Length: 282
Length: 262
Image 1 (cartoon, chains in turn green, cyan):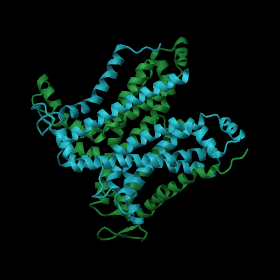
Image 2: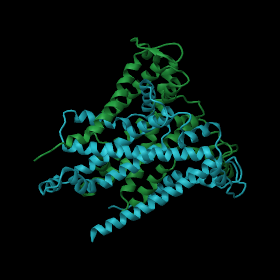
Image 3: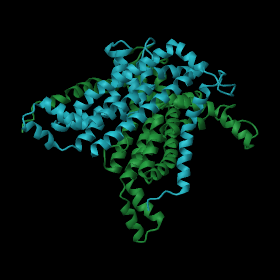
Image 4: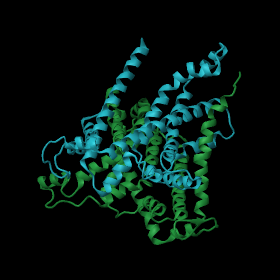
């Protein structure tokens, strides 16, 4: 059989990837070892100074805060998203279609505007406080906006659909006869769930964890908007160093460490589930 | 066995309610007469009228639509051809290349934005349309590539071989056999790419110029200084357009599915 010149098909992808993915990646590594000079410039003198600088307690705190936020976001997403995806996977065909539509549709509205909706809801004189006051739950309005809980709400809200769809994809594929078999063999509902359902949907759950954890390390604008600059994450730090700070090598070093942390997460995911495909991504 | 009780259904409904709550508030306040989204002062169309007169906002909207269309079109061509080439031919570098080409959606956006800003400065590319399109294409390609790749796995290779044996040229085989089979995947990849590009703020902030701005950048800047209800109005309109598009495409899909059965 003649294969002809089919390999030429992949040439544009090869060219684009080499120039605009590998190129920037190598440049990032090189830049992180470059020396920052006064003003916005830098020179190509090898130094580890950019990495050493991260040991400063201020920057360590940034990493800690980012990690803490990403972790809390992921845990909350698992707790909220797994049951949702699970029950969604058990609905009838019509219910599944409707819920997939309802979960996907907000993707099409600007994520910023949805955050703005939260500002309207959470502000001191906002809808949420009015309802609480009216119900008599609180005596004076809560100051949720521009605080840690507000940022957490925004993060969970922005990333929950990814978790739901990832879990749903794997629950959908689940062979329910296996669960029934476990039940017939005398396993309690809880035991059947833990030993069969949970195990078989673990790839979806892990995929959801990666899909929420990885972006949440970098979603600095949610913390910016809902946290009112009180919470400085690695993402905001990188942006600040690139623009106002004018220290490109330090920004590159920060980005490299963040990338390394992310890659580690993805590697762990592959080791734990034995697949490289993220379920529910596409 | 596969029954969902009342309590789980209530839970599903509750989560969906919270999902749509912020969107609902934005829509409601787009019809509010007052400028501040605090209390309801009466129904008004004034923000919709103001929106049409706001040239800067309309330009940002146009830019975002163009950028989304251009990036997803480039991604469709590069990603589809790449997936076909990689599935049908064997390269030693295949695994590495797949990893690299999907990297842009595997890393936090902030890294991509920062790296592109530094890299484009190195290449001395003028910031604006060129840089925006390159950056957006880079994170659109993985969506098309992964979708087409998944679709190609399910296609029987002997159909293509049959076409070739019957004398069709490689080009003819591609357009008459392969492309129709993978078209749904290409289209879904395009749609997803467009949505991601249209909504991107983090990467755009790093690679845009003061003269070429996108809608998300405009909204982001306003959110830090003060949002005018025109944005609410614009988002309401976009939402209506999206729901219409989704409903029409769902109807079309159902129609083509039922045609296929006959």
